[in-house]
Image 1: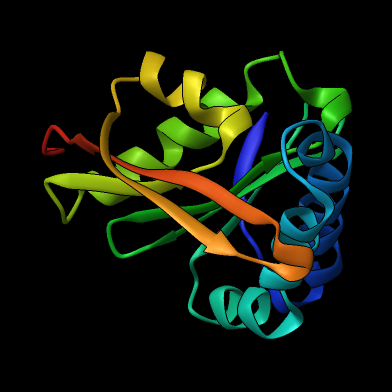
Image 2: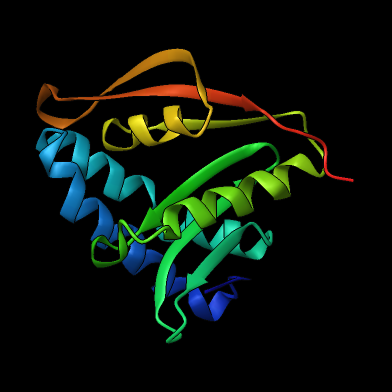
Length: 156
């Protein structure tokens, strides 16, 4: 596997990984209004802004298939998604480690907002609860998530 910086020409790949993963996983955990909020949140403008800032990365399998993406902005990990057919093969862990190493170059703490399906994974990776959040979405549905953090070891 390899992880590379996303270029503007990779926009559709990043969007497809993000949207396909949300559509496949999130309806099992969230009501429709919250799922729609997630889908709209990862808009063209936000993804392209992050790509242009050099903050978006793609993970490719050994057969050169794009399987996942992660965004790091300062000390925050955002938009970490692995396509459902590639989940359970260590790709998410590889993306998380990559993001943590990138953050540890300049920051002591990594922060992220954690969806319900991913919370157990981050707890196992050493993240700790910081605060509970809820956003009211369409139809009176709520998007509930936790903000978590992890102390980084400085890279030498």
